[in-house]
Image (cartoon, rainbow, N blue to C red; front, side, top):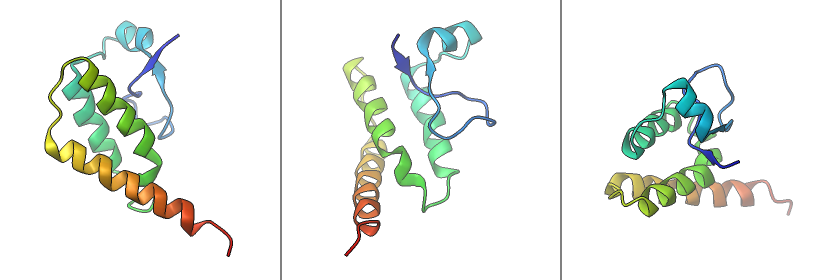
Length: 97
């Protein structure tokens, strides 16, 4: 089963995924840019210290949208770079010396 995007309800954890079939069944499957905008809002609603947790999923979403022929806005790419940097910093911050 392939998994895409994220649940829209607020009562789920930050990285819970649902299947494409589930989204279609719920009638919540919208265009790629709409999904990216919603996920962007979810990222921005998260505390700055925890946003890096979304780095890999955000990168994956952008890649999937690009594969579908969507032109990715520059601010989405900038966020990808920022989240990647934050994820790397968090990895080293937790490394014992």
